[in-house]
Image (cartoon, rainbow, N blue to C red):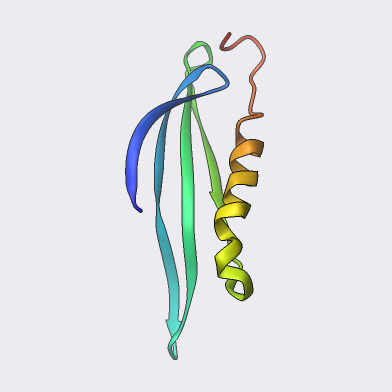
Length: 85
């Protein structure tokens, strides 16, 4: 399901975006799949970091949500020295 919202990553304010990416189309060979992106603000650095997660696994499409859960766990390890709690 596509959408946008607010969250925190490593105690920092973040915006998430999720949807489906499709590319190709050359001769009917369309590829793609779901993605999640998180934009994390680092106020003291004056920066915004973009964390992307996407899964391309056409052979095991039913397992994509499990893969996404693993990727979300990895994204939650994001940390910046001197930022957040």
